[in-house]
Image 1 (cartoon, rainbow, N blue to C red):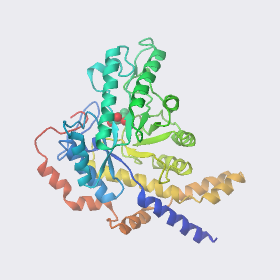
Image 2: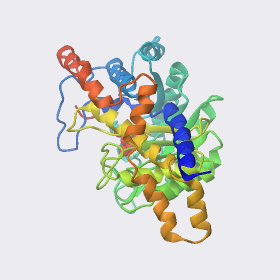
Image 3: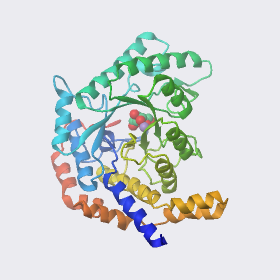
Image 4: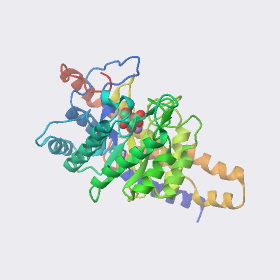
Length: 398
Ligand code: PSV
Ligand code: MN
């Protein structure tokens, strides 16, 4: 095969993957958010879960690559009797579906000393009750995944028994696991620190992996790219988890310092490329991989909807680049121990401008080649600024 034929074949295969690639967007990215110093409110942000879904639907309309929206309970709580069923229908009418249900056991006064690992059994019962409620929500929305993130941990040595907290965590996870339906899963997210400053109860992938392994197949690890110590080789973690069949989900975002929650691929596009390369290598881009590729980020300064669109595009660009890696040349260079040639194969792919390819893939699907420009031209920003006045803006700290 000539070099150019091989390149054409790679490009054709890349197009097929890019056409079906899906990135889940988080409802909270559309609401107001900020740092602990200040939340700067933006005009036109959603006042309700329905309005967040409307914005998520716009992202899908212009990218064709964001068919699901993750909810966070209770931020997106809606009232019975048919609240969540109706919300799911509302999403479908707008061309999207409800995705992962994110639990929240970190914003109630009762959780000061922990939720599922709290030394007080009554608080633990309350936290587990919330997680089970989230599975009820999944039943109503048809969601597959329950996302668990625990802010649990301690600030000072001696504050609580590290080992007993692991026992309590295991017990709570087991209870929730038992409640999952046939096709439902739980994905356990880890985070090095924040808000706990001494010992976090699920601080790293190893802790999450060990609990998930014990629980069974329906428990998988969630990798939030902002949740590691600086310099951590995240792609190694991704490669390892994929090899073990335990990578269930991503929370994509980027960071310069800690858990900055900036747009995916903005702070370090090369890192996103390296992660996506291991995803590809481990079969994570296959149609049936089961990995939930989610964004988990906040747009504190920038306009929210175009920022989410930009993030989806950044994930697409990283994906397109890894799909262009000449696997044969890479394997040959690796076999012969040619370090520089192997590295050059990866860098060639990384340095390819894939924007024209992605523009073509969009146009083939009847989409505008530039989703951000199409969004700005659509008038949606003006419309929501005019219409969404009054009411309580729905968001993190607003
Ligand atoms: C925690 O920092 C986290 O990454 C979890 O996924 C939470 O649910 C989310 O952020 C809230 O923004
Ligand atoms: Mn997260």
